[in-house]
Figure 1 (cartoon, rainbow, N blue to C red):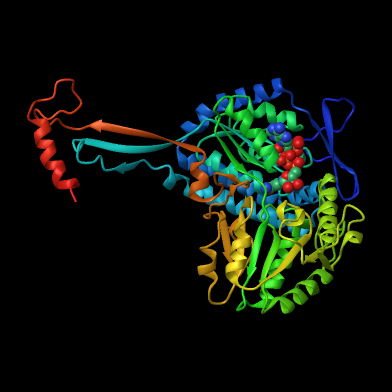
Figure 2 (tube, helix red, strand yellow; figure 1 turned 60 degrees about the vertical axis):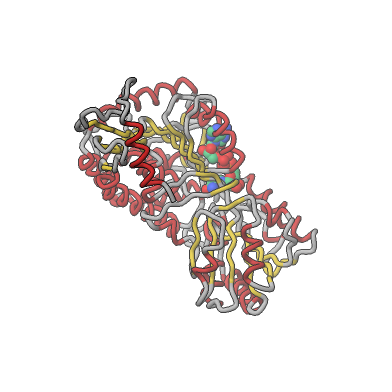
Length: 504
Ligand code: NDP
């Protein structure tokens, strides 16, 4: 891998006002970025605020056209995007390309659905004010701040960015310090695809946590955050000071339930991918499996077979790549050690799999339910498999957790019924993570996994506010409730009419 500098990134790192983006695979320099100060962030947000007037005043169809041009630009440069994602995160090239393609699908959904979702809706005014017309507008919020993570640097940020832009907001994006180049390229592609567009519709501020703090305090109209629960809590605390609303997509510890009637081969294949892809650094990745005792031996044997065939590494064609964030390696080691110390067994891999940035797949079993390896988010290529006596027990264990992001069920006949018992934001039956590829399906969590949604209608409406418009159309002679001096006959008439309506 060479040390070419990604477009848009500075070439030198001589001053403390810049920082380097380096490949987690081999440490080579990808580029240098500015550490945006509070003043820098304030000035970018001011520019975004000025751009808002023009962008939000465009007809929805024109905004969608700009998104479509952006989408075409990203598509035509997909190899460049995939290469940069590969270099900044370490993930294999094919996975990086998949991330680009999923991103495009979500832009397309927002672009195609914006006009419908922004339509003014008429609602019934109700009996008492039947002489009125009531309408509800959906209007953009203003400037939206998006704070993104490093694990899917393009896809994750885009969930909020493309919806916010399609709804008429302008956006300031703060990417993770580990993957700044991808965000810079993403914003550059927007500008390149829309040369006449006002500066400030989509901007990027790079830096560390302090830059994120500055964005939270900059007066933006909403913050959409994806990352750890601890940082999400800090973001919410900052935003609370100015009553800035937030949507938080935080960590997960997604369970999979494998019922006795599951297609075991399909379940093991899906679990292996869901647990190990992206080196387990997926918020909706599989971290715990509860398998019915009737099929547990067959399932674990099949899962181990998949783990054995995985070829993680630094290369562009590896099954999965290195840990993107070095500190994460210690978390994985701590969880594996804790599991084994508490009587758990490694069915595949173990502490020796955690030598370097590339961690081999690890399958743990017999881990006590109160162990860190089950209670905390690991965010590494590990999975715990717990044998249960029945599905009810599996559901109880799956739900008994601080995290509640996604979940999956494998069952030929009862998948839907089991899925309906799960307390989480989204659940897949006979597959894993599938919802993330669907533009129409909202995604988000509850409890420690956060709140609010990205994607789909709910995700779109996170970036709109409602403006209700109520208009008096005609006056019923003498019948006016909104006056200081009501006619004496109004109360008795109302009493009779409402009595007919409300009495049992
Ligand atoms: P963080 O939650 O620390 O970072 C997420 C984003 O928030 C980054 O852009 C980060 O910037 C920024 N940030 C950091 N501190 C602040 C702050 N005080 N105010 C505002 N923004 C801030 O995630 P990490 O990258 O440290 O990952 C740690 C853990 O988070 C992982 O182990 C994993 O468990 C979880 N995680 C979950 C993800 C998910 O998709 N749900 C995604 C990524 C991580 P910077 O990077 O510059 O510090």
